Image 1 (cartoon, rainbow, N blue to C red):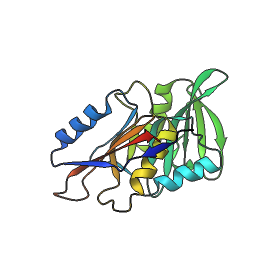
Image 2 (image 1 turned 180 degrees about the vertical axis):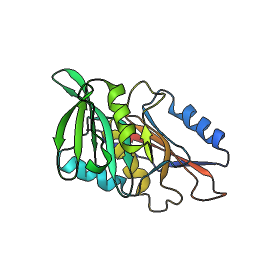
Image 3 (image 1 turned 90 degrees about the vertical axis):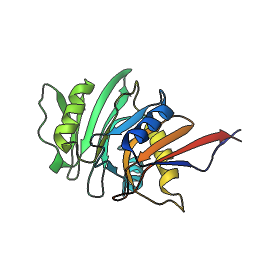
Length: 208
């Protein structure tokens, strides 16, 4: 059976924000994407891989989930995702209890309330996304925008794992935007400091 082999990332740098974003969207095409709520802050990814692995291991997130919004900072993590149940779409918000204000019972239903995390289930994406933004204030978050479909968690995990674990990788870990397709991933990172460029990295999987 053929197995996918990931090629080394290709990297482009841009001093100009507009050029960086223009290149990102041109490369993304119709691929599912996540875009920072505030591109000056981006989405810090210091603990992203640990969060993704832990939530997958305990069954909170599954590879088939579609990620509509996420915040994966060094202190807290919150996510709004789409999954299928009994043939219908539902939207679930999960985040720290301290970050989650009470949901309007007409919009969301409490799914579980544990010491470290609270989750709500919504029928409408708009209600779930509104709750996510209300709970996180959008700080350090990425949201599925300007995209026909949200990216699958499995592709997000694969792409971020490959990029962030590159041994020679330098620069910022603050995600400005990312697109995540079946066989390729492209990510735009914010400048690491004053005068530093935006960095766009792309990887593709080939069949061997």
